[in-house]
Image (cartoon, rainbow, N blue to C red):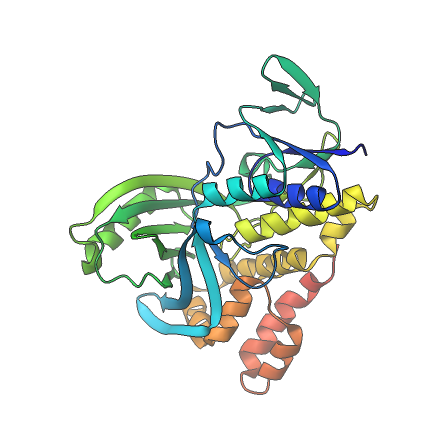
Length: 356
């Protein structure tokens, strides 16, 4: 490689690649197709569990999260805290700040031409035949599900230090209420279609007294890539981020997995190692494989069994599964207390712990 690292896409995967390139002494050029960063709407939540090679800048943090309030089919399972921390970020400011701190040159309105392996920047053409591709969900070939959300204001009695998750086992998805500064993101995602989800979300808002008299600031929709990993290259550029499936399939969390994938791939590329091999053997890839197997298991279950399983898990078990930090050693110990559940989960995830 030359001393320039080309990155296609200015999302979290591109940011991870830019950070790796910068730390290894490379000049980083990022080609972003849009006029600004963070075009795709999402929950903007990031767990703080030491996965990043930097501290999340204080100035981009909208809320600090200390609690999870979790329901299953309308029944509260728990509201727990003390063992989990996270932040809600201004995603655009987060990306802009960190690209700048990495010294990356971000070129906007610079769309990559897949057929020609080039980017048109202004009136000139730049050939891009090696580097990192972080083009996002339009380039993902696996299963995707829709998500819809409102950003609402004038909401009553919402804990701005908690995220609220409401599983709907018949939908095989969940509603969520996330703080966003003084506003609130309320949405739903699952195995359905956008129109049905909008109808369900409107009913949810109508049924909850906290949203009486609220004002809609924004209405947003997206798709989330939940089909697991699709590793590979596009015209010699290694795929990272959502383009290659770096989204946790059970939760839809994408910022952290995408960043980590970009960092791993770019570092391996620059050091002359096989980036695909490096990605396959990483803990984040293993976590995605495990979650995908658990999702397939959940899809095959009767609704009642899904409900029973979700209500049987402790807050810590929910957190480990959601964050991708589930440990086989802990599951083995759990078999003494909950042998049926622990053994069922263990037999589902064991094949996913082997890189392939």
